[in-house]
Image (tube, rainbow, N blue to C red; front, side):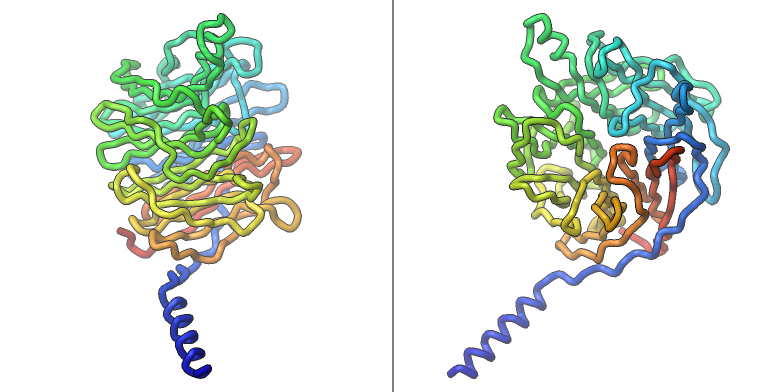
Amino acid sequence: MQKSILLIFCAALLTGCQNQPKSTDPLPAPQRLASPAGDHSAEPNLHVAPDGRFLLSWIEQPEDGPATLKFAFYGDEWSGVRAVASGEDWFVNWADFPSMTVLANGTLAAHWLAKSAPETFSYDVMLSFSRDGGQTWNPPMRPHRDGTQSEHGFVSMLPYGEDAVFLTWLDGRQYAAARQGKAPEEMTLRAAIINDRGEFQWEAELDNRVCDCCQTSAVRAGEAFVVAYRDRSPNEIRDIGIVRIADGRAEPPRIPRPDGWKIPGCPVNGPALDARSSTVVMAWFTMARDSARVQLAFSQDGGRTFGPRVRVDDGQALGRVDVVLLSKNRAVVSWLEKGENDAEIRIRQVDADGAVSASQVVATTSASRASGFPRMAFNGEHLFFAWTQPGEIPRVNVAKITIRTATN
């Protein structure tokens, strides 16, 4: 009898093990590249151009000098470095960084932040276009038209159609109204579509109460835009929210995977999205129940619903996530993890069925704010990384992993 029970137990155990997803193979080791960024550079961002080249942007700000937004393309080698704009009045912040994108017609678009008043968090989003590859730039405009001296930032920008961009950002116009007793003191989430002639094609408020200073993320999933951000409930639950925009209409905000993280302040740790057709992947950080975790979930229906969350960190997560899809069923997530001395940029592959690879270290860095938010992008062959290496003279570093296996 005992032997039969033991056999049944072993069979059940074996069956259970066979049903567990198998780990995916690790990626090749990252290859460090020469960086086009100079000394005193930080706040990198990445975008994949329609021709497959990586567009790296960053800010350089020598001591006691103006801030300059610069960029370079990487194909087989780096293009020449060009400048977008410079300013003494810019708002330069470790967590709220500029971005660039390439439109279908070849026009470049760039955004950065400029102060609108002496108060620390009074600054505007500045948007500019270049039709000649970045040699000259249009006079900058603001994608928000409220005219208030309040916070506008944490932008996500995507190309739209032939000649326009979709932008979403955190908008503090209600704080200005609150000072006059006309509105509650709330940060809002807004979006707009603007063409390269500066014409507004659409604009809307997406959520009227969100976390004050966490990054946003946006992707195109089929014909819809999907925006992720950190929400803020009336009782200070700050989980990740999703808004879909389809047919010119913003759907009501949703919390697709509630964590229940109650925190009476902004954690400055936003979500990340990537998409391929109707597949969307979302990565995010939480400290719900005092447990620091980086999590990931897949959606197979354009961001309408998300599957089970998968924990991807190694037990000492700091967050600052990014995510890319290698295929419709496989993603790579990056995050900052406490290391032996300070912090490490780590990556892990995650399959849609929950299978995970071992984590890999891309680079060692600092856990301080000076290290910023590492960025990642994939062009179908190369997985590209950019991050700030802090120190007496900070500098943007880059690396890549070549992935030659065809992906679907």
